[in-house]
Amino acid sequence: MFSLFDPTAYENMKIVMEGLLYDKDLAGQISIIDRNELINTAKLSRTFEITFQDRESVKASCTFIMQAALENLAAELHPALLSEKLSGCMISIRFSFSQKNEPEQTAGIDRLMKAIWGENRSITQTVSYDPLRKPDTVQNITEITFGRLIYEDQIDDLALLSDHMAECLRKLEDVLF
Image 1 (cartoon, rainbow, N blue to C red):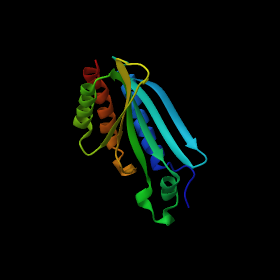
Image 2: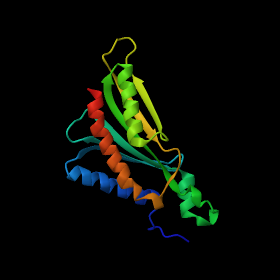
Image 3: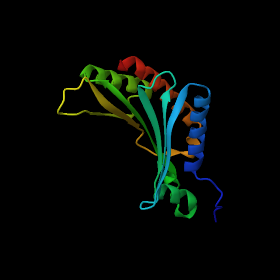
Image 4: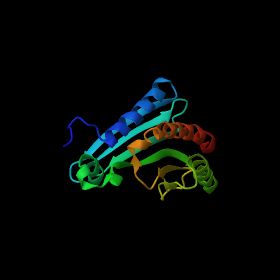
């Protein structure tokens, strides 16, 4: 039997990351600009997103995304299923910004992301622009994924993750313009 008031790993990790980022906001390091908590009733999944910018510049934004699917929540709420290895969350981080329409700048962004996040992370840049114009700048969405579940016993790593996100925003300023 489980208690209706026993928070899940998803809830605990969401609260910790939220607290870390709001503390950075209160300290004047970042500005939180958006927050979404979504429940997909068709797939019985949950998604938490929180977006922020560096307090000194609004050129780039960072979105922390945490997702728990039905099998992740069920594995935790029903231990009799013996699927403890599924009781975690998927985490991804998305940076959004405008950049010069130059391959060298895109390569510089890739080098920066790998220097901060490591070579073993999946780092994907998606660049978009109006093909009917020859734009000087393009929109870039860079996403970092970890390719595995993050578990509640790794909750202390969220502090380091929040520091890396803020550092990446600061260093993007040097690369962008």
